[in-house]
Image (tube, rainbow, N blue to C red; front, side, top):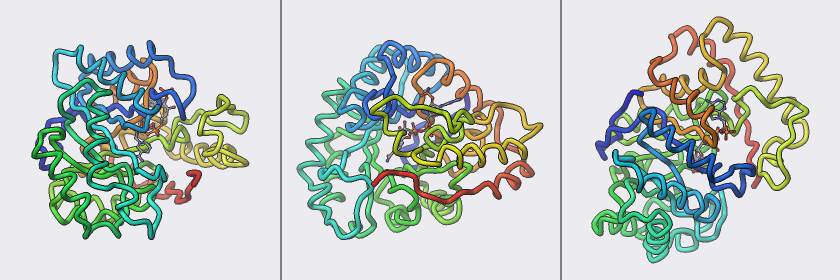
Length: 323
Ligand SMILES: NC(=O)c1ccc[n+]([C@@H]2O[C@H](COP(=O)([O-])OP(=O)(O)OC[C@H]3O[C@@H](n4cnc5c(N)ncnc54)[C@H](OP(=O)(O)O)[C@@H]3O)[C@@H](O)[C@H]2O)c1
């Protein structure tokens, strides 16, 4: 496992981080806690030292599992979590003021709840789980995040950017007021590389590449016959003819990747790490086999330039997220 410096926060974090949404076992159905714990432990054994969870993942369940594993681990594992929008609306909607979404007291109380779930005295990173550029001038988030740092409850602070709106974070990145951003970045959505990544490099802001496997689209396992468990949110993400669309895109991708070593998901993770602005890529993982596959990618280094050039034409800008 290789490590990169996490922006101004200065932590040395593993290139592969642990996306802990699925182990919350609510929106993603099917995770069993004993498997999730074994997968987290295996990841740490393999050198992973960064976990991304959120209060909203299973209403605190993901945080509880992460806390259990991290408290038991002798080596340092950096834990990042998120404050859900108070109105529980993902993504942030234009025209809704920050006082409805991240009022000052709520920022503090939500962090305290996360610390109770985690059983920790501080998180290494606290993030706003949505972001709306209209809030930039507001005092609520500035004071909230600053006070989290001065009180020691959060050692670093950042935002998770709305789906497919990387440029909405440019102003806050340039302000120097945050340590990191979390953004969708994968072979299908390469847009953060245009403006956001150069700004993050210039202002020394850490980048967490989320949804690197397109919620499963880039695992190469989705076919028109794929069935998700009842209650699993992917029934909406891959609804109607979308599974067919994904399968067609993946078939074209595989053709261009012939001869590149590794499975499609491994190449997809390597793609993310090929941009030096990315500090860590955080695939969602619920089992040991995916952990071992994902963690194997870091040592391979960036993809060759000609492969990256051929991946450019596989960009596919669309929004499958349910509103
Ligand atoms: N708004 C936000 O802030 C936001 C939104 C979405 C996600 N996130 C963060 O980003 C993380 C990643 O996104 P995600 O979990 O939604 O989706 P993802 O990482 O794009 O896809 C997760 C899927 O990929 C599979 N997978 C992972 N590594 C694999 C490998 N090496 N080979 C084959 N399959 C592999 C997983 O399998 P198994 O589960 O079966 O192991 C899971 O089905 C989340 O867990 C969360 O921490 C944040």
